[in-house]
Image 1 (cartoon, rainbow, N blue to C red):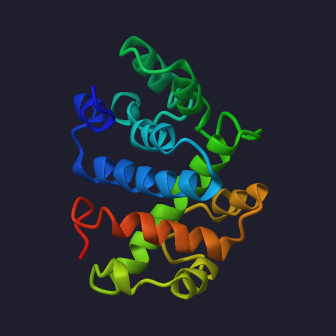
Image 2 (image 1 turned 180 degrees about the horizontal axis):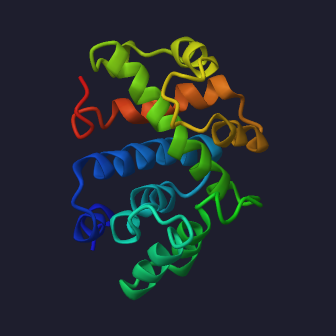
Length: 180
């Protein structure tokens, strides 16, 4: 089963599906940039919140239930383990590039999309400079954890490069994300 199909088997909320697509779009571009497995990173991004509706945001269970679902569905154990550990409230000792990238992609995707919404949904008008400016405004897209975004620096990637990569990935999925 395709990752997006699998996600939709467990998730019905359109906003959550779009969030997962956005995270996956950034993950795929990060994999390309870092010489990693694009398909694996895309899959991790799509499936990282597969349990969010089931756990109803219970951060003591989020990720753990997701991994159980993925293993039951026959998804690769390595992907299930990344999903299990992505809940930064339970874990945080991220060393693997895929785990670090997921932390950054999960938050930066929302920040970049918020920047696009300010520009009338025009993702192609968002620049790394725009994102850098909005990153500094703590009240802007307040749910986007800046510390998780900064984790990308552990992979020797400057923040501005992350913004560029994230924009590039999100542009490719603008229609699915409701952007222009």
